Image (cartoon, rainbow, N blue to C red; front, top):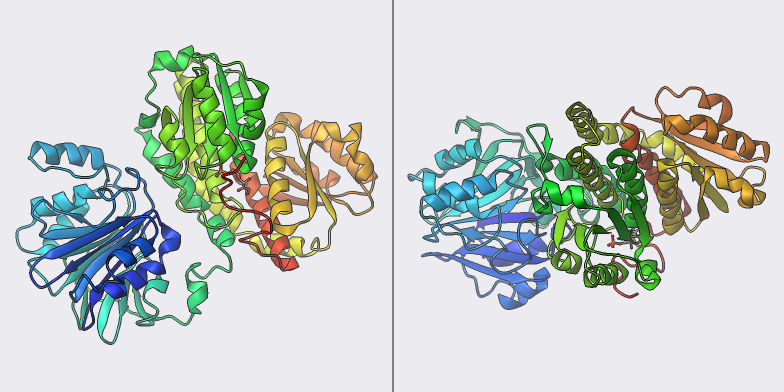
Length: 608
Ligand code: F6R
């Protein structure tokens, strides 16, 4: 995720671009840049780090005179944060500048073709192909050129473009990445999100897929993919400017939960090609995958919980032994590692001190290492032998939701890939798994639509003192995450237990009315978990069950049932966690807690 802005009008562009970008920093903040037409040339200034570095460098825009320009705040996807990779990107003759939010999926193919035509690339980004492609097709008419590249570029994009030959105009186009146009009194603007323009105007056009906008000082024209002019209605924004950054959501956590369908799609789609799993970044031959003797998954917190789920999947599907360790424990147990072992480090931030230390320990002992990381160019991403990125975008809420979901999906892809290469599943089974994986985003969306029912239920438990989460197998892993979500944001004591283990001590804590959330998605374990539910209820527990659609049996045993749609037994975590996230969120809101910044917690734990 990145943020783009653009301006043309009566005022100096650079200060307005910088101000707009400051409202979009939640979309990315590892580097930033602006391009301004100064009356003769397009000048670009970029800086690595937060936006304030760029603001200082340009004296709040004063060193970049000009009344039209574009800007970008980056969250690295292709290529680490650096000046070269920061946007805007030029064509070779510096007569076109481009900013981009999204992912160009066929950029490698396009880059190869452009290189054959003598185009030289200065960055590792997917965006630079757009600048050169525009140059290649440009014959004097920007709208015609933009329509041509729209037919050639695959993936998602919101682009802001300026052409030196057309100094009085700013161009924008989108597909599957957000883009709005603001109509101001002394100029017009483009942006990835409404907050960036609210200081200048409340009259906004929402650009739809494959629509092009052409801005001049006074006017805005809209065109379709065939270059034909279209009419659009503007909307008057009446939201509060503070709420707008969250896209109208009350908290970042809620917004991020609602981003999960996109996150899952973005992590899956680029790795499924022609019905096959292609994880290019893995860089392992089939022989190397076959030679793996054991997998170690090492992580902290929620990332560790995805690892616990992955253990069941790798072992069940690919028949590879897996050990899962908390990173803070791993290095102190002197793990037995060698070159036939693969150590997978999972981390959203890529900076968690214990996970990084575990990675170094694994490398020192000669194991192969793979990072599953969200932040491009982070320490774990740089130091692991290979890195597989989760495309969740910046996560602002301290409690992870969308990065967790993206990590799960990355692990599913790896497990299916390994199972296939090691001959443990048939091509037909792979096809079935892929079908189920591709249904997940829609199913998650459906579950998120059920929030009212969960909110209503959560309101009953605002005063709860203790809550238990129980399950068996993968359901136990889901319970661990459900329990962590609740305790970290609502400060209610909660524990996750393997359902069969309760009676070995913990069941003595159950009192009349104690809430127990039972996760029951593994069909072969239904009966066993239902017996545990019965035990719990007979001690007074109130049991909320989260189970698969069709498991009506459970209604006789549990007090309250939430159903998730049918999926493969290995992928139920991605669905069952949604109601549990929503439940925690609404309990926290109901208690008046600081949902996005719970007490005593930090987003990235860089101390051991
Ligand atoms: C819980 C949460 C933490 C992180 C943990 C690891 O909601 O966010 O438990 O999962 O601190 O962080 P990363 O993934 O950045 O290594």
